[in-house]
Image 1 (cartoon, rainbow, N blue to C red):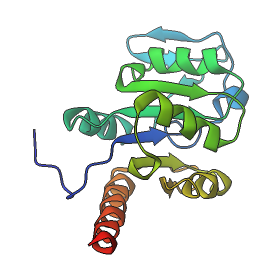
Image 2 (tube, rainbow, N blue to C red):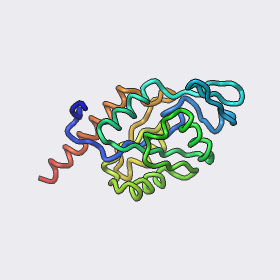
Image 3 (cartoon, rainbow, N blue to C red):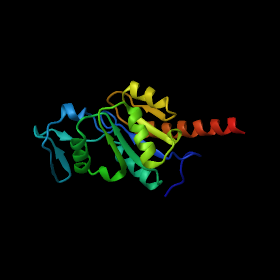
Length: 175
């Protein structure tokens, strides 16, 4: 395992799904039932279901550095999202799934309680500014993904740096 690139490692990294991990509003743009053949997942209209290019690299990095990951997605289609994650073989990376139609502060509180990770030790990625602002108020390092670009490796590394700097400045004020 490589050395961690920043002085402070986050307690958990949390991902919204739509336009953050995959390039869809899955509950609006994809039609079940889904099928999987030779690692290719398709919906009932034969559209291939994909994740953004850097997602597996990011999830593997988190796993390799013992950083848990979780899902915080605002959708009424919990079972559909979990099915897609299983078919895409990414469900195994996540320790908690918060998928329901409530404000993202509810998702963060559930993860805080379930994983025993303080808000200020969380990094959260989302494509919607409202969710970023809501979670920032809790103390979460909330990172906006450019619309329809998802989380890139570059954005992920920038988030690690921002999170580490936040903790560094907090330590200075405590001295």
